[in-house]
Image (cartoon, rainbow, N blue to C red):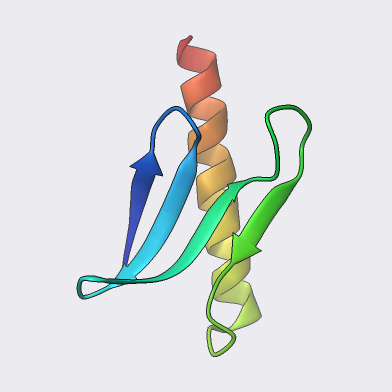
Length: 66
C-alpha cells in the first residue's frame, strides 16, 4: 500500500493498493479541524489511526513551511 498526495492545494491524500485507490483522507472543509477519513473497513483501526496521524503531521509540516 502507498499513501500519496492527490491534490497539494486541497491537502487530499489517497491510499493505493497497486494502482487502484482504496481510500482517502482529506480535510472536511477549508476552515476548521475536521477530516474525512475513508479507509477500507478491513483495515485494522490502529493502522487507520496511524495513517491519519501521519497525514495530520504532513498537514502541519506544510502549514509550518508557508
